[in-house]
Image (cartoon, rainbow, N blue to C red; front, side):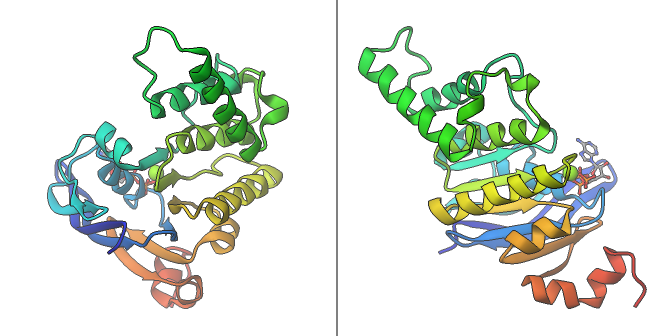
Length: 249
Ligand SMILES: Nc1ncnc2c1ncn2[C@@H]1O[C@H](COP(=O)(O)OP(=O)(O)OP(=O)(O)O)[C@@H](O)[C@H]1O
Ligand SMILES: [Mg+2]
């Protein structure tokens, strides 16, 4: 059974069909990329999977359960997490405090007025583990708003991992980054995928990142699936070259 199955979903905004009859399934441990020109419907597709928008048609199964109408927070508790095209962190808090919030939520402590010493110790340990995994130890006490876009992105990715997801959706994790930061984020994603056996879907424009990471690639164009295959198949597809890379057949 696939971890995620998307069956024939569509999403309309007035007369615009932003996502048009798209199907996709993600196996446990798979790392899939979704690519396509600006406005192809990639972010809208993520919004459908994570429950921010409801599809006009089709259905979505997660771990065998129909989640088509389920609100976003319940999808998170089932093991789905995401990061955003524009990084979502608390810029006025330290890296450590940004991580502490989702760690406490995951542990079910967010409604407790105070935490026991044992609980606080457990939270601190988990935050330290996430700081180390994200390469953020040296910056733990810096305000996130003062960090580079790459470190802010690493913080956001580690915040989503604090929720212990089984599926992580990453919307353009290297957007707006220089070469070194793009490389660092790519390595982070690669290591997390390898070490945690996490399923991931990655929207990305940078071909170096896609071909270094993805096991399969789905190409969206004008809301439809133009192609779905291995990196080799996608690179060789004349349809993809014509529509996405702007080459003529
Ligand atoms: N909330 C919304 N209301 C109305 N139209 C929307 C909404 N969100 C997206 N759209 C439209 O849907 C289409 C797909 O947008 P989407 O953001 O999903 O594309 P994308 O593939 O993520 O593009 P990009 O690569 O620029 O991020 C676009 O034409 C966009 O203007
Ligand atoms: Mg987008």
